[in-house]
Image 1 (tube, rainbow, N blue to C red):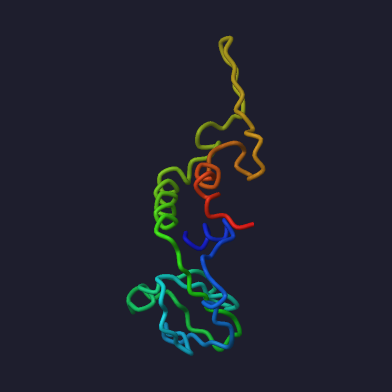
Image 2 (cartoon, rainbow, N blue to C red):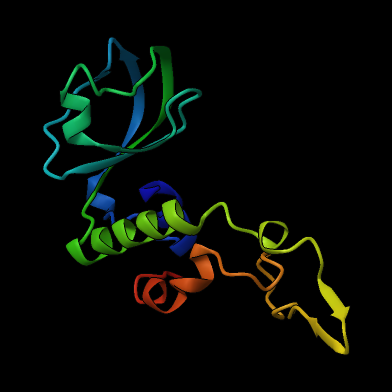
Length: 152
């Protein structure tokens, strides 16, 4: 979820000096050449099988290491300096998504409007361009908190 939210705000919390660009190989969960990561998260780009954001702690644990073996690739390994406030926001979004993420207009009601016994209602289209049909999703529920971290 961290990588998805970083992509949404267009901010991976990295500096040019923390971007390692070149040829890499991933074998048995190990990135070669190896680095002494000074941060808790990295982003891999340019890989065919491993593009994404990873916890350095998970990479160090053979039982949690999610990296898939692949041959040499030309890409980048970015060290991410993610602030604690953003990680707290990611946890809040993950909790909200677990609770409400599968609720949509069809689950709430199969109709966009109903009329019965002299009573009628119409669901708001919401006027949003996020494809949510006016129903809440994590992007619009947390928009004001996400905007603090957003890069243009």
